[in-house]
Every structure is written in C-alpha cells, then in structure tokens.
Length: 456
Ligand SMILES: Cc1cc2nc3c(=O)[nH]c(=O)nc-3n(C[C@H](O)[C@H](O)[C@H](O)COP(=O)(O)OP(=O)(O)OC[C@H]3O[C@@H](n4cnc5c(N)ncnc54)[C@H](O)[C@@H]3O)c2cc1C
Image 1 (cartoon, rainbow, N blue to C red):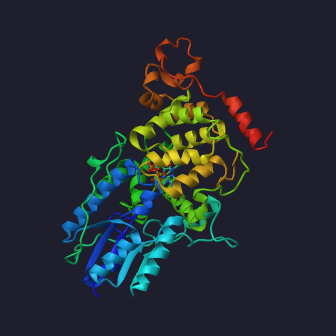
Image 2 (cartoon, rainbow, N blue to C red; image 1 turned 180 degrees about the vertical axis):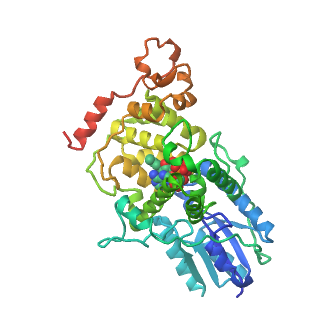
Image 3 (tube, rainbow, N blue to C red; image 1 turned 90 degrees about the vertical axis):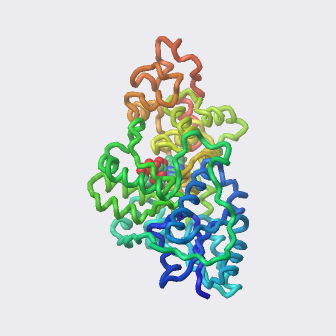
C-alpha cells in the first residue's frame, strides 16, 4: 500500500496543510478527496451563498493541484462510504484529515475511523489545521474547556504557535480514481448579488492586501460601519482557504496595535471552537439557560419578518440586514446590533436569528454563529448577559455621519448626517416615503426584556 487519501473538509487550501504534508511525505502518492457530503446537505447547511463560495474553492484547489501534477477527486454521497471506496480503489493504507469541532464532525470522525479500521486502514486526524491551537489544548483547573474568553485569551496568547508549512511542489495522484465533475457557481440560483469570490488564490490576495493596507488601522477602525475596515477574511477562514496559524504568524510579524487586535479576534474564533468541541449541544440549546420564555414565532411573526427584510424602522438595523441579504456578509458591529435587537428588544429566540444568518452568511459557521448568537442573547459566555444595545445610540456612535445607513437604505439616501438614525424626528418626512415606521418602541422592548429576565 503506497498511496494515502487526504480528505479535505473545511481546509480547502495547499499552503500550510499538515494532512497533505504528512500524507505525501517521502514522495508518496496521494488522493486529494472532497466529498459533497449528503449529511451536510440533509442538515440544510448547503445554502446557495456558501455553495457558490465552495464551488470557487474546489475549482481553485483543483487548479492548484493540477499545477503540481495532481488533481482533486470529488465524490458525492455519504462521506464515510465514499472515503472507504476511494481508499479501497487507491489501495491506500491511510486517510488524513483535519480535526473539526461540531457534533456532526465528531460523529463523522468516529464513523470514519471505525469503517476504515474494519478494512485494515488508519485514520490520522490533524490538529491546528482549522484552528490556531487545538480545542482542548488549554483547559482550566476544574473543567474540560474555558467558559470565559478573558482567561482563555491570557493562556492562548502565550502559547507557542507551530510554524506554517509551505505548499507542496509536487502532488502525485494515482491513476484510475473516478471523480465527479467540479461544481460551478453559475449553475446555482438564489445566490446573493455581491458574494465574495472563493478559493485559496482569492484568499491569499485578500490577505496580502489586508496586511499591507488594513491591519495597521484595525484597532482604531474595526467598529466603523461605513469604513468597512475589517479584513473580510471570515469566509476564507470558514472554508479553510487560509490557515489561521499562518494568519497569526504574519500578523505578529507585521506587529503593532492593529495586529494585536486582529490576533485577538482569531483567538475568539479558537475560543468558540473549544466551547463547541466540549459542548456540541450548544449549537442548538442554551449554553447557560436564563429560563427565557421567548415570544412564540407565531406571536412575533410580523416582527421577525420585518427584521429579516430590513424593515424594522430602525435604520442601522435595516441597513445591516440588507447588507446581509445583498452580500451574504455583515459587519461585526451590525451582527451585534441586529442580534441584540432580535433577542432583546424584540425578545425572539436566538435560534430564529441564528437560522436566518446561516441561510445567508457565506462565512456561516456553526461555532462562530451559534455561540456569538448565544453571547448576544445572554445565554452564552458573556459575563454581562443582560446588556441591551440601543440601535440609535450605537448607530450614532459607529456610523456617526450616517453613510452606512444611506448606502443600504435608499429610502433614507436624502437625509444628511446623523439625523438619518432617527427618521421619525425629521420635520419633513415627505422625502422618506416608503421607509417603515418603527416595529417597537425601544422603551417598551426594554421593559418587556427586563421583565422576562426578572430584572425589574
Ligand atoms: C450574531 C453573530 C453571528 C456571527 N456569525 C458568524 C459566523 O457565522 N461566522 C463567522 O466567521 N463569524 C461570525 N461572527 C463573528 C464576526 O462577526 C465575524 O467573524 C466577522 O464579522 C467577520 O468579518 P471579518 O473577517 O472582516 O472580521 P475581522 O474583524 O477582520 O476578524 C478577523 C477574523 O477573526 C474572527 N472573528 C472576528 N470576530 C469574531 C467573533 N466575535 N467570534 C469569533 N470569531 C471572530 C473571524 O474569523 C474573522 O474573520 C458572528 C458574530 C455575531 C455577533
């Protein structure tokens, strides 16, 4: 048995790829394999925006492999059956893949290991491919994971981060392994008009541009909604077209407060992953219950619909929700505000919002999405679970000139300056016809929330 299989999942790249490096050590042949997994589709996770980005990623990965003498093998079906079939066809003794954290990924790993071992083959699972540190690498004295970010980060930031690996020069793939055709985005319908381009090549270009001209100002500008001054690397981190280990090294090499703030955000990503790895149920159930009795989806239907459509009457909320629909991406400050508005001001279950985000976000990611939603809802790891963000004050603070609102809410394009955040106060409202009235009075929303959480 000379060949090995590398199963690509959320690590669709050639640079800094430990499974590929290990599998091809000593010039061994490898089968680079991606399975369009029926389990992921059945779970509703394969939505148009992410499929579009994924199609770009697979095409780019295949092109990169071909430049090196290889190719990507794509199969569709049950991931375990397909990996076993490919391993048998290649006469492979080993399968290499990246560790992952969700309940589904953990089950996949167990099923795969059992099935391969029954055939006399071995599964090698590599850490620090999709995270900087392995989930479980850091634990507090009395628990299997950190439940609060600050102490986690204190430990995280002093750990040694392994050196990134270069891309392989040559990849030799055995003949005769059948592959399905590669998907392409043009065949998909329902994709948001301005989703980012996927693939490692696009990711590396964006990273280079970010290090050159974005990173230095990140600490000061990351909350500036109109400035759009964050990296927008999240889809590349989600699909693994960029390595978080490489990002940490390159940011630290650049140095300065911007780099420090950026690396801290990457630690947040690791933090949520170590929570989900230890508590996979946190994707669907409260991490820390506050005994909420959320308004039912039926009672709150009109409010939920207005929130989804960006028609709540609160300009910064509507701008962010429309950005999400148009780009399949939303600024972090927008995510915080829209999630706080839904869960606290409208008192709607965080799962309703998380589901909507996952339907549209190109970077839609179980760990980051569900645990950030829980953080905002106060059922997660926030140590101030009852804070409520005021969309008017926040709009004035993070979009002081109102440019972000005017960009996304054309009904308000004629309103100058920060007045755009409170259109109900305008003397002359003739110019803003078509913009909806507020779905809720903020004071009423706050009172309902405080009562529900017994804070009165
Ligand atoms: C309600 C809600 C839902 C979210 N859903 C997702 C999601 O599905 N997928 C996702 O990747 N991020 C999610 N985030 C986190 C964050 O908003 C995005 O990662 C960020 O906006 C992506 O933009 P960027 O790449 O420009 O980020 P930058 O500010 O440039 O940060 C760099 C990277 O750090 C990581 N990061 C930044 N902020 C966070 C955070 N709060 N938690 C974890 N990692 C972070 C991301 O990987 C990001 O790409 C969510 C946040 C909230 C409040």
